[in-house]
Image (cartoon, rainbow, N blue to C red; front, top):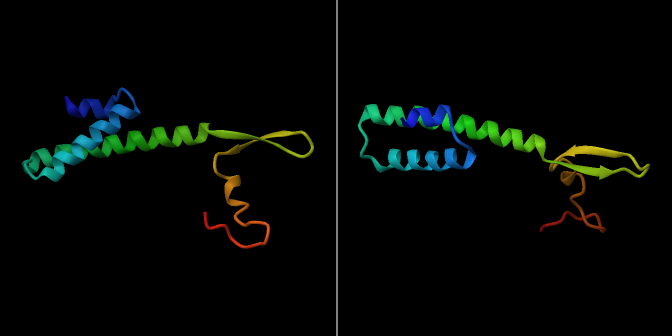
Length: 95
């Protein structure tokens, strides 16, 4: 069953593929109202699963930054990138 796949997915990639299929079916306009509701519910479950997996991966991706005193600190990915957005002249970088 399609709904079973959403509640017990085999992985992120498979869930994302199924979500794309569900969206395509819904956009196709050939579904009955009842089928549209079923696809919507399945899509919501798939979105929840994929979002959860992405959040888990984001938390796992950490870069180790060596401090001046030799200590090593784990910093969440992307956190330190926002700190230095200017070049040597103090003007913001465009690229």
